[in-house]
Image (cartoon, rainbow, N blue to C red; front, side, top):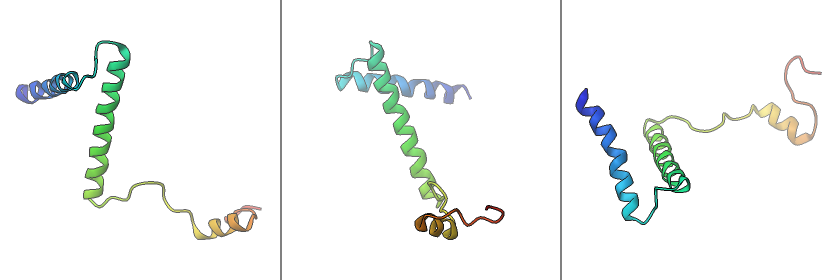
Amino acid sequence: MQQSRNCSLLLPLARIAAAQQQGLDTAPPTGKGEFERAMIRERVDAGLERARAQGKTLGRPRTDQRIEAAIRKGGPPARPGWQ
């Protein structure tokens, strides 16, 4: 357990070193913000890629065809109980 925690702490340090080598100044708040944003984006992309690999459906569920047809006609939604 101790080894995995040490590794998880070293990874951000390695990324900070790599960012500094690329010329990203992590000292001011804006530099840290850019670095954090890049790390978040990387984690989100990895999660989305993993979900796709597992065959999960991403995004908003499709709208019912009756509701979509009513919207296209400009009328009220075709839901039971709606007037």
